[in-house]
Image 1: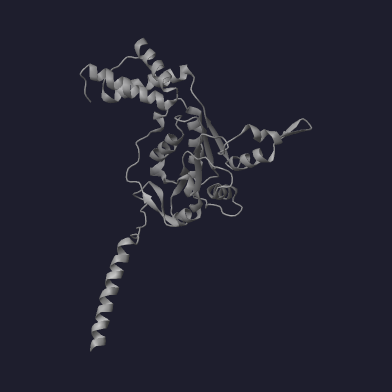
Image 2: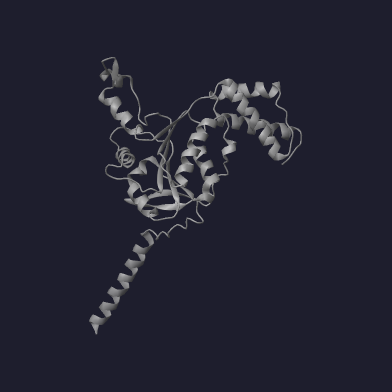
Length: 300
């Protein structure tokens, strides 16, 4: 009989241990219903991760992106080819901050989600998990953009190697329903130094880059499309600011003239910010329209 009592105590202790372990173990993650979820983030957990659906997508429209018509045309055309099951390219959107690179990807999702486009955002450091991410969406009847924003590497990083392999397709290649879109402030995704050019040689009047430059070009060169986003001139900035002021006022149902006062205020705004990008133009328009209408006693 004493042994039976001991056995009961052991069982109770085991139950308590199991309950404690249950509290710290990660909860199982349900599969995403891609018919409802149009976007997801890859969340790291332990040595792996999981896809976390995004409940609401920013209401960014292609028409809201002003001053980058050619960039929109090229990337939208590539995305439409992809959605139609036609050959399309992995894309590097590079250039000045605030010029609409990541906003353009979100606007594409807003425009084409109804045609089967889905976006999975992956942090640069999590690109090592590309095979696991692709496994999670394999066989889905949707077209996925694996999107990594504001990417910059140091040579030799594990994420750098995985992205290079995925783009090259030599060791690991995503399936036909996956494209990779990456944004970066750097054209080659890696820092460039003056010393990089010391290994360059002139052979038969042709420049042959040194190893440092070749390594940097080798990653960006694997993207089928390079789309550059460049700073606005002051005139371009003022034109975008004017269009935003008129659009915002119109959305509220107000009338607000673009006059010399608004023009001078916009120039002062961008000089104070030290930037004349589309993002700064929108920020000025928010300030100008809001402050003018508040002064006039107008509410939305």
